[in-house]
Length: 439
Image 1 (cartoon, one colour):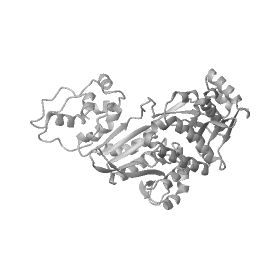
Image 2 (spheres, helix red, strand yellow):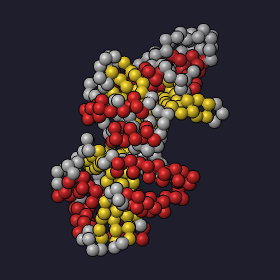
Image 3 (cartoon, helix red, strand yellow):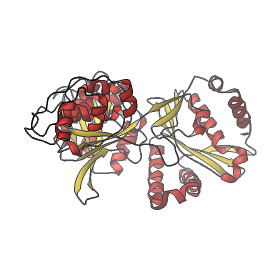
Image 4 (cartoon, one colour):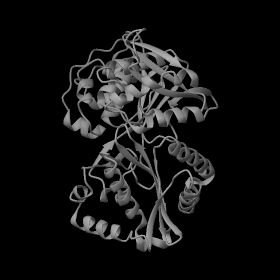
């Protein structure tokens, strides 16, 4: 698999047809990697690179991976380069697009190329990818003593941003309502009847009303969230204005505004993926003085019905498992955020506490073929040898905490004798708990 690098907009636009073809064929393709969204994101945020994978030098591209290098300074004052996903900060989902049948090879080729670049940290934030795609991408790093750790995605409010609820849509509004609980179904029907055009009405943003409607939506959003966003508020608002305007220009924006008479009382910005036939709820706000009209619930119901009428098959609430989403959602997916770090020594690796998190680190050590030193501290020699036996396999097959893993896999295997005078007498067994503790 050959990997080429695109660094300019002109070169990128020459690949638009290939990108669109690959995206259409990719069963894992999602809106934030579509050409309309990503091309505009790269245009507005320079300093990116796009990796392009081909089976051979003269073959058509089969995969695209947009990333962005940026300088960072750690807490010790050391400057290094971080590679991050090109959609970071705006995309609820990230990853790469790929034609079916090339997932693992393309991921492996991308990672192998990244190994040759000068960086210390690779941030894979909000990654939405299959196990096969992840395996191709991460196995290269795990085999070369890189640290790989999961980043927490639970907010201070308790909302878990790794959980993403969505609703699979039937071909009719009545069919969708039939999937809901009796109470929710009756409530939605009652709310929808209030849209009679006299007391409550809904308008939709177009070129003539876009600026007004964006300011209505963001104005209500500001009132709700300004105190929590602090210094980031204006950056968020500016970025949202750009993204909503770009979406209208690309025919991917669905922005209903709910009115009571001449007063706006709610708005919901959704993105439309016409290729994948999905609608994504991205940003909503309402007037707290109008709670009697249930503006949030009414706007979601209106948007879902519109999505069904457009022939869409999914309404995606994106990141976060807020309870209100489950009034409408009938399924959920999980995403994750990973950080890959170069490690110059074993002790520099992170120390995750769950078995799934430790496996890449343990695998990295197991792949190190250097002999144990003639003399070393007891802890170092013992730790070095732990990753050469069956315990690693038992860790790999368990998904629990260290304690749960130890309880479920308490069988050991004979330990090898020490390699030097610093090595203590060999213990009878080495368990998966030993592996976890040593990482």
